[in-house]
Length: 212
Image (cartoon, rainbow, N blue to C red; front, side, top):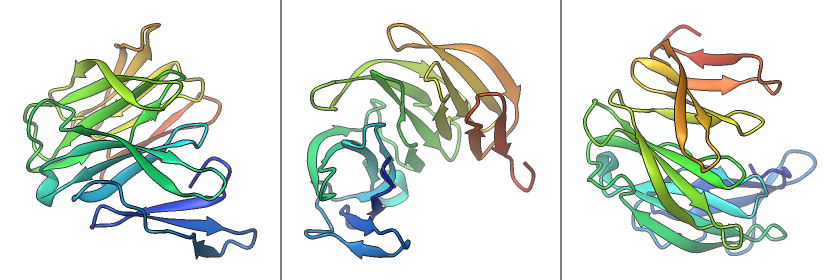
């Protein structure tokens, strides 16, 4: 769902992305030209919009997560139409076969973060740090943070000053440095499959198996 609540985006196995207009009654209508090509042959998944709604970031992966790609797509905020801008092949520097691909991108004002999500803990298990071009929304890798337990999901705090990651054993908190790099400041033992921070940044909630 885009930040203004006007459009819903759906990733297809073909690699295309369907765009639907959401009206005031909650009904969906597919927009003209949908589904849109992403210039990828792989399944589109894990979509995330930048806070302005102008750029859509998605991962595309083949069978069992192989041939993973991170894509940047321009969004026409009036019509919902999509135009591919950038494809980053295997952003973790190695094949991602037998993984669940990458998690959605989490944003700070000028930086983005994406993570490898292995089914089993095996290299590369990194959170990759990107700078975001203010003019085009494209990404440039500026560094990475290792997480040998396999990061599964990333969230950014409401103020954009902290990133939280869940892996197979822990929920890890990182401070966002002035240059966009991440530094660990807390670590809680929990095998969390999903994490969420409340809008006031006072509490973090996570789901761990049958418990929360």
